[in-house]
Every structure is written in structure tokens, then in C-alpha cells.
Image 1: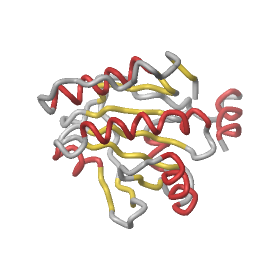
Image 2: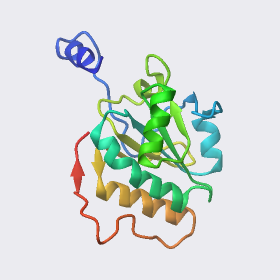
Image 3: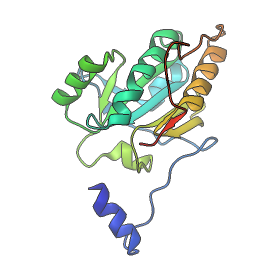
Image 4: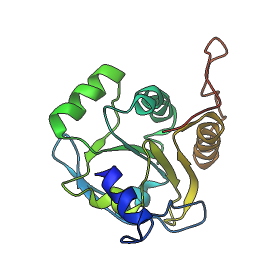
Length: 180
């Protein structure tokens, strides 16, 4: 499907998808989680900032990135901040992904046609957004970006009035960037 969209864009039959950068308003969404509960961005932001990570289970960079998002969840969620995954796969496969990669934060399933992914203009996964309570994107990154994830951790620690803890351990070899 992504190939067809790119091809249509190249020949001028479809408007280009845009990536939502910092400072822009995040599109709203309402999706069901794996546990059947409905989550809306509006309700999430009432609690505080939200980290929203779009992914596909077959994506190697997603598989690499999600354990680090789990660390963000363990350190900063529950203090008003939320970490949410938005899967472009079905619920059964997504549950298996979560088990394999140790993901315990809420994971939503983008329904047929990917309405949330399309609203955000995604061209690659993972794509991660830190959205402030006012609905504006604070951090936006495609692929794995060590510096962007560190910035997300710093923003969440400031919001929660906590001392920032390193997201990456000194004994880990973590690349600066991996494209999605």
C-alpha cells in the first residue's frame, strides 16, 4: 500500500503526505486498545503529555526502538504522562509483538485504512511524537533517533518535575540513528 501511494504521488495523482513537525497541532484520534478500551488523544492529553509511537510489527527498527519506549513508560508514565503505541497490524499479531519485546504500555490498533496514521501523514515507521497537553507536537522523529528519545525523556522529566535519568545505559552500544 505504501508503494502504491508513493507511486501515485510521484506521478502527481495524490498530494504528498506530510510529516507533522514540532510546534504543529497533532491530529486527534480515537482508537481501540488491545484490551478493548477506547483511547482518544484528547482524553490522554487531559492527563499530561503523550508519547505516541506508530509502528508495524515486521519493522526491524520498530523492534529495536520499542524496548527503549518501554523504558520511557516505566520511568515517566503514570505521573501524568502517557506512552502509547499505535499498531498498523491486527490485535493478535500486535499482542505477540508486545510479549516478545516486553511492551506493557497501552497499544492501540489503527483500524482498516489506517485513519490515524494517515492523519499524521506517516511515510515511515516507527514515527514517534511527544505531544504536549495543549495538543502541539514537542518532539517528532521518524526511525530511531537516540537524541530525539533523550529529548523526549528530558521533556517528560521536566513535566513530571523529576530528575532526568539516562535512557541509555553506558554498557549499551546504541547507534545515533536508524532510519525507519
